[in-house]
Image (cartoon, rainbow, N blue to C red; front, top):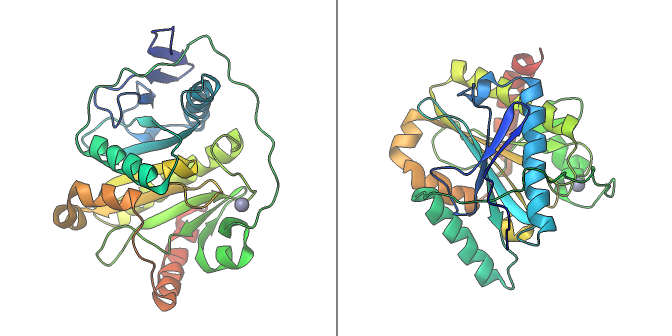
Amino acid sequence: MFNLLLTFITAFHAQIKAPEKAISQYSLAVTVPEKKSLTEWCEEEHSDSYRALQKIVRYWRQQQFASQFLIYGKVSKNEEFKWEVVPQFECSSRVTRFTQQWITLWGASFPKKSNGRCDPDWIADEHEECELFSDDPFCNNSVIEKQWVYEGETIYILYNYRPIGIGNDKLHFLVVPKKHRPTFYQLSEDEYQEALVTVQKLCNYFFQARMIHEVHLFHKSGIDAGQTVPHWHMHVVLTTSDLQTCLGKLSILRNMLFTPSPLADGELAEKVTQYRNELIPALHY
Ligand SMILES: [Zn+2]
């Protein structure tokens, strides 16, 4: 399918390469080589990485290789940060979709070397237009009102009503654009940049306020990739050392792919109030 064997591309600061340890043999990674931790990336580097990520997924779509995908990154003290783009293929039934999720989980648990491809000279097409509103939950004001913990210019941070993980904190947030953006293809560079700068602030806050072990960041585009709400959203899951020890990596990953049960209304309201009180002063700078 691919004529070009190039696996390494420079897009200003961000680089595209085939990762040594990958969820899928087709995965591609986007990194900023001089910066080990995502918390050190500047606005420009987020914009560059946005363009590199868009280039990969648009190239895959144009080559009719895959039009759906998972983008995953883990902020951890011991590992260099990378965004991993994992292609997800069209499924004819719920069974094949379920199988694809399990294969992704398997690959995340037992990573392998990737030989993913992207043409370095190929130029991605322009930003895509889409409907301004939809009837999905993130276009619904009453849902936003119940779950928002921080409001930016173009994005909200919501507390997820189906949080991953156990323990008291259940630190699981969603970053959603205010405007309706069905998938990552339609998300604008400005929205992405604000999303990531806010995620950085949120990480920095919790690194100081809690004993945070790792932060898992991921977003899915396409129903076969496991996207359940057709309005782009990035998951931000922070795990504490205790949580990590008792749950293990596999449980976190399993819950990433197979959604846990929702919180009761009262518990949700309590969490939202708590994190609103913490995050509004912490992120407003
Ligand atoms: Zn929407």
